Image (tube, rainbow, N blue to C red; front, side, top):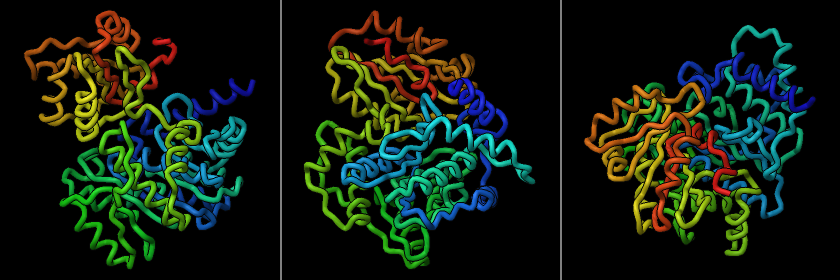
Length: 407
């Protein structure tokens, strides 16, 4: 009964209010007034949260998750808010790895349904307020929040955090954040608060001057990422994210983590946070990887890392959302692999016609699959032990993946 009620309530939430995960840009509601009004209705004071606020184009989820895992392994009660979810809505809101209960979700949605609001809040605004309510009720020691999109006008920007962080800046969501790196950097810089330290994941020529100027105007100390810890077997960009998390941990706790703590946090990151599907090796000989990289920088970095690990052929099954465009360099890197395009069940999937338009940019034959199951059945039959398969391009494609397929 609870499961039926939970499904009906979350289905209602997805359909009653715009959700970017389901509908794309139509769901984007910039501004903080709706979030502030919802918080006031539930008498929620965000200043009660010992929060960390993380923005950036890539690596936000990785940084948030590793920081949460470090704090959890230090015996702290840690709230973690990330997006999107892959299999279950409750993945977005966790405390020490435990998802929010179905009952709490059901009760909260029921209260939202009963409200007579003069405005129409978005799915993300509602979900963020639920996270705040949950973390306050549980009395978390620390709360780690990943921004949804951008920073300045993102619902999470009502926070008054102990520290902020920005991982890196590249072109993504240009229809909403601006079509230049500098414009996007200004939107991300919107999370910088007065006298609140800012941690930068990567010093980039297009963004650093903007972050430096904004920090100075807000009298906020700016810290550059100290890459003093190595993580064997991880790509460089993930080492960067994990070191940024360690920098934040050191600031928050005023403690230097020892190697044992770092290793425990790394080993238990999935159980502590639900983190996964970022360059996740799910099968060996042949190596099968799941990865949610979905923009130009992420895709190229993932391809580069896997190529260096692979002795045989590299096969790629790529999914993509309708609003996702790829630059020439990304397409050229993809065309160097044995590439297949794949539709996913979410209605934001690119259509066969859209994939065919991209296929015309190369002379290589590229298969287009209607589903991940169809793609896996055919690809599995031709993989050799020395080959590698990378399934990537979208959270939605990964959510269609059946983990029992390779067992």
